Length: 397
Ligand SMILES: Nc1ncnc2c1ncn2[C@@H]1O[C@H](COP(=O)(O)OP(=O)(O)OP(=O)(O)O)[C@@H](O)[C@H]1O
Ligand SMILES: O=C(O)[C@H](O)COP(=O)(O)O
Image 1 (tube, rainbow, N blue to C red):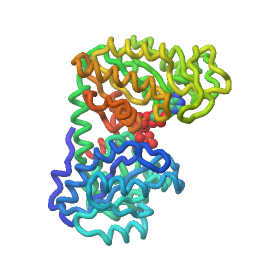
Image 2: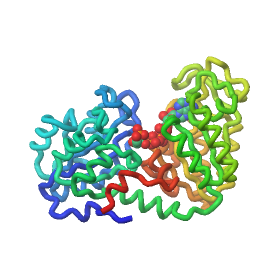
Image 3: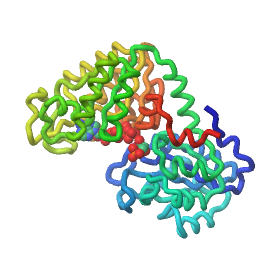
Image 4: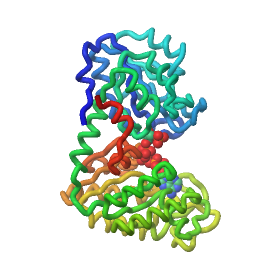
């Protein structure tokens, strides 16, 4: 794989660098709860700013689907970026058009500007040529430092690289190097743990993943869809019932490939999605019709730990439960700490990735003991499958 990095930019001083970063950070009540993704892109921003480039940050936040959605604005993220990089970050309420052009024109060399959520425009996700050109109008060059969004062929992740001289940022470079080193030839048995809430956008990946790993533990919202497909009554749990055929297909593919699929055997259920909600642990055939599974139960935790004990390599994306609200963080915390301690003992190589997954590992105090923690969730899974990532491909000269 060959691409230029920001070290290859000739005479960066005074140049307008459009830098795609991933600022899709976990947020609660308007406050950022984990700034790992901001810290990951800070070296690129600082390096370009130190060299006198005008650093114009492009990013998405959430999935506003082409509409302007107030609580998906990047405005509250600008001060958080400023705090991490230790220099001011201006904000502009649109990423194209007059407002953006004016904000860019006002920049001095070395300044940093964050433009509003690219996904407020429908053509971002469609990779529309006019929209990509409108973004490109504000830059002399393009830097992609968002490995975690590189599986999307969007205007700001792919289209721009074809319009301007394109370079990989330091985080993109580090992610590709570290994942290649850790997982290029993984020691078997390989265990994958997949949970979280992005069921429809990740479930298809599992069909390929089961051909590459020896065991797949499924937890979180993802598990509910598999359990429902197997006939379990999941009550009001987060579940995509229409994906039952996909889940069944994946289970068949796993059997064919000799990959063991491990589903929860019990669940912690509650009637409200909030911290401290009254809850109970029940068997799968006793999930009340008006309750939600918000975590896997104690027996399932023991199974997950045993699978970790039997693995030489662990790859993990997606928490096992709604870890942001206690006590539904129990399984995620227990599994994270167990994997961290096996890693510390030299018995496991552990790689985890994903915006919320990293937040969960930090919450468990386990991130520092993992072999490698990636900022990427979906992109990490696609990389693991061996798929081409459009954002990476477009950088290759
Ligand atoms: N049983 C569950 N019911 C509802 N939500 C759940 C459940 N289990 C996990 N979640 C939620 O899943 C979310 C994380 O899922 P997600 O797939 O976004 O992972 P991620 O690590 O952020 O990956 P990516 O970087 O691809 O977004 C958390 O907010 C968590 O509360
Ligand atoms: O959080 C992520 O995994 C990335 O920011 C990509 O977000 P997306 O799944 O909404 O494209």
